[in-house]
Every structure is written in C-alpha cells, then in structure tokens.
Image (cartoon, rainbow, N blue to C red; front, side, top):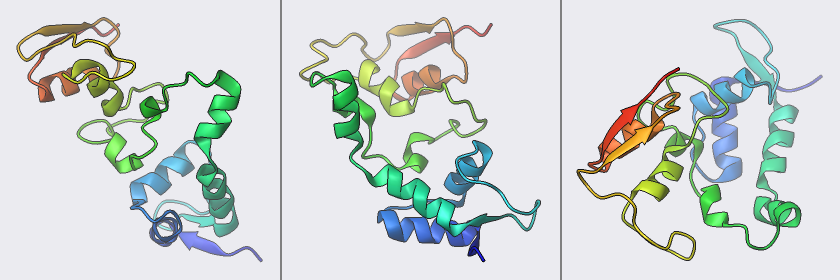
Amino acid sequence: MAELLTIKEANQWASEYLEKNVTSSNISYLIQYGRIKKIGENGSTQIVKQELVEYYAEQKKSKQDAWKDQLGEDLNWALSFEQYKEAETTKHVHRLHPYKGKFIPQLVEYFLDEHTDKFKKEVYFKKGDIVLDPFSGSGTTMVQACELGIHAIGILK
C-alpha cells in the first residue's frame, strides 16, 4: 500500500530533500495544478509520497542543461531564477490567486532596476519614472515598480 502524507508532512519531507524551505502553500500549489494527486477532502487532504518523490526528483535534475539542449548556449540562465524558492517568487500579493502565466517579481525587477549585465546593457527606468503595463493581469509589474520607487499604470482588460 502506498505511503500517504499530510500536506504538513509533505512540506517537511520536501524541505529536507531539497535542502531549502518548502511551505504548505507550495505543496497545495502542486495539488491545485495537478502535479500531484490529492487524496481526501478539505481537512483531511493527503498525497501519495511516491508521487512527491518523483516530482521533486525530476525537479532536481539539471534544468539548465536540459534547456540549453533545447534552446542553445546563448540562453541567459540568470533569468531562470532557479536559485529562488517558490515562496520567494510569490512574495507580497503574488500568491493571491493562481495563474500560470504570471511574471515572477524577480523577472520584473530584472528589467526595471538599475543594474546592467552581459544581457541588459543599459538602465531603462529610474526612481520617479513611470512604467505602463498595458496587460497588467495580476499587477506584478505595478507592485514591483512601486517597490523600486517607480510609478506604474496598469490596464486591465
């Protein structure tokens, strides 16, 4: 018979396995998006441990190598933000509702902040500037602009 874990037990196991903090919200997210199956109903949700093991084993493989094979060596791996825990990429209000096409805040910060690197050759925004997001969706651009002292206008359709 398969070993079952509660969400709390699953996040504890995953945190130890990945050697980084995995929250109950992270596990709930995997269930919500069908990465792992939910067993039980509200208040007694459990998951099959083997599914969790398989999911995180796949995640531990070198993503960079797999993507470079598909997309080429000029891939800017820094924009993968692989070093961030999911809890960090869903900071502030970015976890209010699930949407697979959301920007992570670190990506928006990359383009709005004042740094340059091999790929970003110049700074485009400074404190007090205004950025327009014509497809504002969940508002990530506006939240991050505000955090950087940049004014933002977002348009919802």
